Amino acid sequence: MVRSKILFLIISFLLVTSLNSCGTNPIKQLNEVAVVNENRIAPYFLSKDIDYVYRANITVYGNDLSGIVVIKKINETMHRVVFTTEFGNKLLDFEISETTFKVNAIVDELNRKILVNTLKNDFRILLRKSYKIDKQFEEDKYQIGESKIGNRYDYLYFSKNGGELMRIIHASKRKEKLSISYTVESNIFANKIVIQHQNIKLRIELNYFNNQ
Image (cartoon, rainbow, N blue to C red; front, side, top):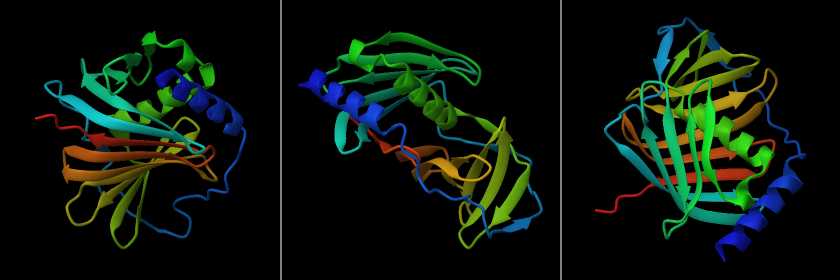
């Protein structure tokens, strides 16, 4: 049953990767303000003492795959990410940093370059620690920092009330590519994370798994 779900997921993913969305530039028509803090931290996966365990649901064009994701910070620059089934069977195991990526294990059904590269890019953004803020914008609820990385832009949405990081939008110069939204328990822990692509119909939802 799990293998058949994976196959449906892969087929759906390959069918929709060529579709384009009509996403727009996320900061269009926002007011630019002076940069208050040039260096901002994404705080949710910083501790080496915590195994971050989430229930995962991956949806591609209406097909779902559920399981468990364990994220572990193994040194100052590297995280290990393990996907398993609900029963503990390993699907994908990789180590990732800002500049490196190593697959330790992967089931044959998931071993497709386009899917692996997409997950690599998604988790590199999710696990990135620090951002140099080049521009700052403002709207009613958020202070928004723009960080240029290569030919892409990351927009970090910080709550004006508590200062928590609530969203990251990854974009080209003209339009949004994906968003990461956080439901936070504190300013150092997210109990729900949603990664939503705009140019393909891919959604990854992570819900904190407390087995105590």
